Image (tube, rainbow, N blue to C red; front, top):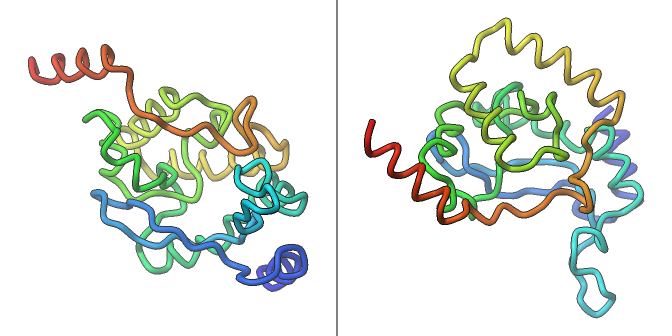
Length: 190
């Protein structure tokens, strides 16, 4: 299966077949996540700048079927990821998390997770973080098994592939100042 998907990516996008990106893992430790490439390289001269411009038809199919995630099993074998856990987000988001949101790094990131089976990219950021922290608090073998089984249904039904009005997802820009300071004050009182 991996070889077939790699061949499709090679024909559709050329080299490299794999997309490598640094992400924060357990306790915020950085690692290189590996996925199949779903976008063309940025090319401002051809108008290929945004995700919507760069995402190809093959890339949409790979994302919809979650086949672009298959190489992440290499990250699982290396101990950088788990099959189930909060999805690894971008490194630049680390400084934007409030203390509660940062708890998502108390466990290894996963290929799938609670947020993925409850809405995937269609969720807003608050909901994603709520589900990530809920997973941290409730994690167990039984919950992981339920998430893996639910993932099969979510992938087959193609639910929540992208955020409403976006080719992929909306950028996380941090917490509103009032919310962030209220949460900080609440944390100080504990």
